Image 1 (cartoon, rainbow over the protein chains, first blue to last red):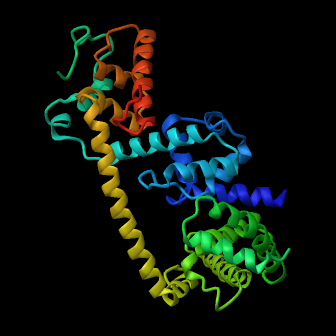
Image 2: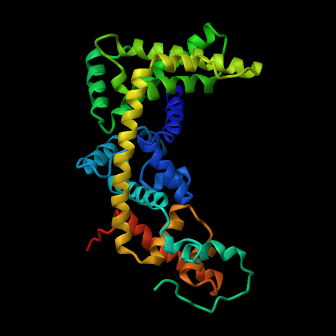
Length: 137
Length: 212
């Protein structure tokens, strides 16, 4: 019982460590507004397996051993390796997008798409912007 | 109770070589042992029974001091268990001292932690340098991945992906980008969901690589 508790505590702390898989699991949960049960379902594993996964080393997507590492982790903790690969790619891609600078033509002062999306709330309800306009090209 | 020295050395080598599951195996092996040691010490010496403090101290010693930095431990100089216990004892003393100072409302700038960090300066410097190199490499890799993702989509997809990445939940904002804000809300939700699902499939595939 005590072992389980300290392991869970460590798994929570692992979320703050970018070198551990717990960091990616928390990122996925945040991005997808997912509960622990949702995450367990996404990886086809138990909640105990999530603790195990969180404490494993985060596989490097660009390393030649990536697939092998994920399979080792999935086998060790009892999760679906394919699903884990997909989760890691999704989180990594979204992080890359988030960290990239916004291209000038999409940002202010020209009311680009992102600016339009952000300004949307300021517009009064009921005011239509000309039907189904297609921004961009 | 006692861990076998041979197994200990094998696990240590796996940690050094960044084996994918060695971190979890080491945590499962050493956390309970060090937790018991810390709990006994906290109770017997400091008359403290704070479960979360004991867990934090244990995790700091086992996970942060050792598992994530196995190169700091020299197996030729001492046994691992002794090394972890000493690290935990220092962390416990530091945590309790910090707590007492906070309670007394004292300044924290000269706390025990600083003294410990000062003693470990060379290894800390090496760690910081190593971390900076890793960060630079991962930044380059991220940029490559971003380029791969951006190649496939159009401008609108780029904005949608950005909103997803920023954790945006509001249908309003996605609908505005898609130009469907004039449609009934149920329809907007459906269209937004379809686009989000489409983009997430691409993200899961790791950018531009499409199968089939």
